[in-house]
Image (tube, one colour):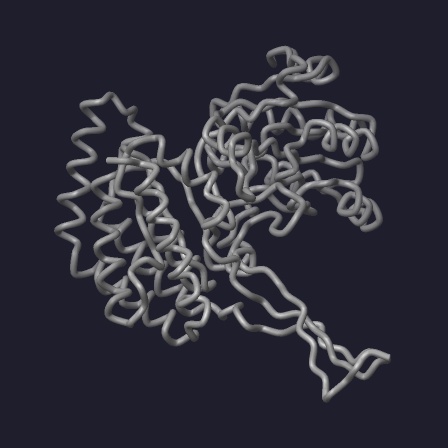
Length: 418
């Protein structure tokens, strides 16, 4: 295959299809989502056969157990895909909504209208259900999408692509509204992220290496986050019971997610109260603790924390702990070492809570809540295309609104500028 020529064709087709999906009404988009759900239901056997080919090849190629687990399309995961499509169909359509309307002294009325971004390229690894999540969100938000899944899931993704194409045809939308790249050649990624004439936004979903490569090489705008170095700060005025519960959940609910706490900051005045309780709980869950010098005075058995620990996303049962004098030092540490993903304060002091919210420069900032809530579903977005730590356009969990932009609209009645 001539990868460059193939990708150019995919890009041209996506650009043409983006005009059709941008003007589709809500009913037609919802009908497409429900038709995809029905196609998946009726293709369970074909999907299972395709997925087994991927699983067999993955095992032969030495994929570890965690990656094989992410790759597998179990009956319950197929159920989840169908349910997810129906859920996105039930969400409000952001496209065409007009807000901030106001009359100006000139007599004109102006406001902002939500519009699709155009063509979105999504690059992801392992999980074939991302194919359906991404397709559904892009379709509902009026965008054409080019999906490049991992080579390990090629059979599963192509089987899902058949379901999508059949459904789009049924509701009179172009098949090229959603395209799943058919080649496993890595050169396709290089082409996709540099086709600025056809692609408006790239969304990478995967490991840090993938995201760094795309961020460095892309000639198209990228919505991404590199690390999830998330903090919980237990303040002088914290309710100790709340603090213990939140700190345990933020670290141990799941270890391998980007919204898992990696560093715990504790005010010096409450450290003696809270750290022994947490050490006992973490010990029962076999979490390795790495502490600063002051932490070791209270918990002598913890491992010495190094400078590198404060900048590490463990994605594992490891937690670094630092005792700070108070909130000012905690905020300074967070703004220096945080990846600007999610950071939380545990306090009963309203003034401190407000100051923390204003001064911590992260995409999600929380009060008395676990960092694990930084998620599109938990935020009521229905689903997310990913999480952005960028400051322009979308920030935090990116749902339907994050896949749209705004343009100014003006209403007049023959008005002319004087």
